[in-house]
Image 1 (cartoon, one colour):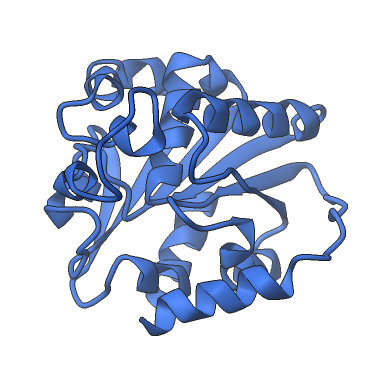
Image 2 (cartoon, one colour; image 1 turned 90 degrees about the vertical axis):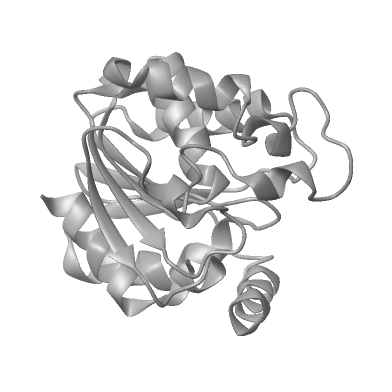
Length: 218
């Protein structure tokens, strides 16, 4: 619960922040999970910027948006910042699935060098079956059902993003991605397990910060 409260504080504190300028020849785009917003990454972004020669930016999409609209938002950000730069992506939870769909199904792998996912349900999550009532076709939650079209296409089309270096960090105490092993279900990825970390705690865990930094610089 403390991690959820901290997310709320970060989102509230960032309501009036200005759009940042992005220095350097490389930019990292941070994509949040369901029912969150871009500012939840502020501590992690600060850590990365202090230790790697990159600029960072986040995106925000609403919980009621269609999955394809969230992908559209990511694509538009990449189009805006990629000119003259190389791009990496970090995605938490659903954000990692949005990023993978962009890479594999929207041609984003030509623009992106690295993807780091944090507690992302690569094989879907059973929690999506019961969260917030009936599932709506094309919704964010429908996309992460274990038997969804999105999950199946990502599994079968992994080769379309084979040039992108993938790192996946798993939260062993995850109650949102069930089972937690789903976060490791991605072929040809470097996998890190944090056995004593929960789903939202991943955003503020120093060991997760270190894995993100390593994934962005390897």
